Length: 497
Ligand code: MLT
Ligand code: ZN
Image (cartoon, rainbow, N blue to C red; front, side, top):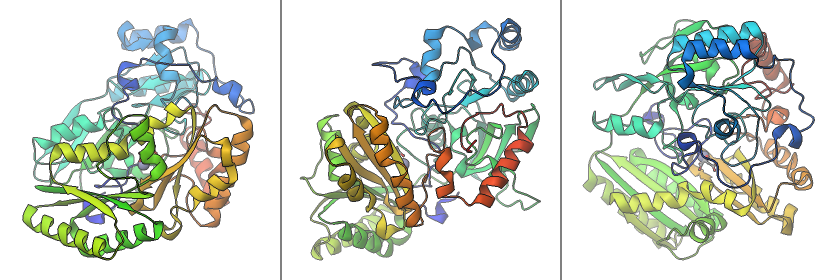
């Protein structure tokens, strides 16, 4: 997706699958701290294990011969990090993690698993927030972590081709030497892998359930020859195939960047400020993010981050990217003078110093990391028409009253994507029932989406109908049956059973 299309989320482009702050290195260290969540099979007893094979010595012998002993993990304590999602919502009990390096190895693993009916859970950086990237039962985990080779970088076309396990931040660092940058950015950049971010690719290579390699790795900007099969993998969360390589169109790194952090006293002022930012900043507006008071309070109280502003009900981050700093600064300053003169913004600070910009972005990007410190977190990732963007937060506060420790909202205002988070001391079915399906019904009535960017994963298949028609869901099921007839790829995820 090119920047020209102007997605106003965390600039550059809309992100797709799950996110995790870069400071959380579960996928890198695989170390787990604190209490483990209940096993998914116990917390969700209505989900039954499919009729898949249980791993035996013969299976393990095949995997070991293929990968060697160093690239297969069977020690239960080492498997644990692959079994738990980082917000500790779900936990499987896989006893086998495979770490292939090449497409051919993935192909041989899948062909074998398909033949022997072994269920497989593909896993990238394990940054997902909907339980999509960890096993539900004992699925074999296929980790793409070692598939981290950059294959080519073309400075002129801006096309990067790499393996699916490359980490977003490493790719961005690599591209900086070429005067380019990744077309997306998110809090989990330090651990999320590009294979899980397929919404932004030009082309991709994937391995089907039967081991066949599908080459859609086109690096052309325009290629209208038949069905655009790469799109099948966007939103499929590893249920249709395992993405092994991607080609990405990367924009030039901007010469000038400015960031404003604003305090506002009403959501009406937030909307008016967004509209003015679009009109007055025009082509240099690259990001418009939103934080409410309870979200900012979380990072200042729990993570001890410092906010440069006094306490306000709402905050906005507005970032500009351009090629001429004097021009950009002048535009931004005029915009800020106008919104303050009109009383829309009560307080604000603007900077182009890298360290100050980083500190401000941390206030937004590290909210996710603060939430689990409160207890158990129910996370919702909703798209809503912009005028109703915040409506779910007060509605939920009224509904839950004192039973929640914290209810807060933040997100990608420019994309109309709200992250509603409800923290409780501990998970109970009672609170769950008071939140769901209410949250989805509310969203559906407003014609929103029940998952803007995090996906459906394990947590939401039974609610997909709030966002997709019966006909669409049936077609998805037919595609799944055609591409993975034995259902070995990421079972229990995305589609309702
Ligand atoms: C974000 O925008 O911070 C991520 O999507 C993670 C989250 O929703 O907490
Ligand atoms: Zn987000």
